[in-house]
Image 1 (cartoon, rainbow, N blue to C red):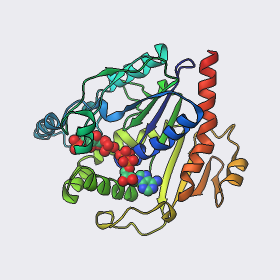
Image 2 (cartoon, rainbow, N blue to C red):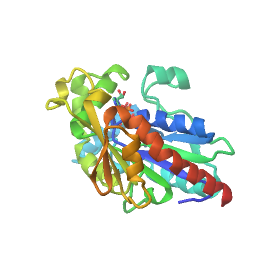
Image 3 (spheres, rainbow, N blue to C red):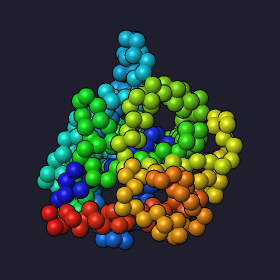
Length: 290
Ligand SMILES: Nc1ncnc2c1ncn2[C@@H]1O[C@H](COP(=O)(O)OP(=O)(O)O)[C@@H](O)[C@H]1O
Ligand SMILES: O=C(COP(=O)(O)O)[C@H](O)[C@H](O)COP(=O)(O)O
């Protein structure tokens, strides 16, 4: 935690929607005049695509069939913790990009499956924004969660997450359904052991729940739309959250527990803006006074 240089981390599995949620944050940052530096969790993968393939073969040959991009040891989590810690102390740090597809290759000038070089953050930012797989990890080696001042979980129910991943990986990254299904299966051990535990560390979880049949996510022809879903928003510490204001502003919402509200899927952007804007403004104004 850093009063002077605050950090927001958005954590979600592959396909959960963290990149989509980043757009909402970017809108808030722009409207509120907040100068944020952003980092992607993928920048902290340990291996490029080719070396990851060799490492997977090596791990499998050694009997570690739980190894995947979700695993702690497939990522430079100490480096990520160092970046969080350094930013919190000095407002400086560095990041790079993992290039997934042809569009990103054109943008960054590096082939798909490779990293760009590390580059320092711009000076004078108001906060650091992280979006990726491991923004709230606590394990024997690192405690990333303790450095973040606001921790968000993006966690669709799993069938929906798989549908979102399959569609995105097919359309944007050119993978087949079979290849994506294989990746989902191979990542299951680390999903349970490395990804899920983070959602008890997060301050707010956004869980999209479809209200259409997603029983066989592997044949779904499209992603359920916002109107075909609800979102459960759960606050780890409900103290200070004005639920009656939220319920009155978000038409069709209701409280399902003392710390949770349910909203129509189409109101997710509005709900995020209503909930997050005052929190972000508080972090920034406290940082300027620190
Ligand atoms: N709230 C949402 N409603 C509808 N589609 C969504 C929503 N969130 C994400 N998606 C879709 O799911 C796919 C994966 O989302 P993305 O943000 O790329 O996930 P991540 O970055 O977490 O891997 C994308 O095709 C995106 O358009
Ligand atoms: O799982 C993730 C998380 O990112 P995202 O949330 O963007 O999927 C990896 O970055 C890619 O899958 C890398 O694998 P590949 O080299 O196969 O693209």
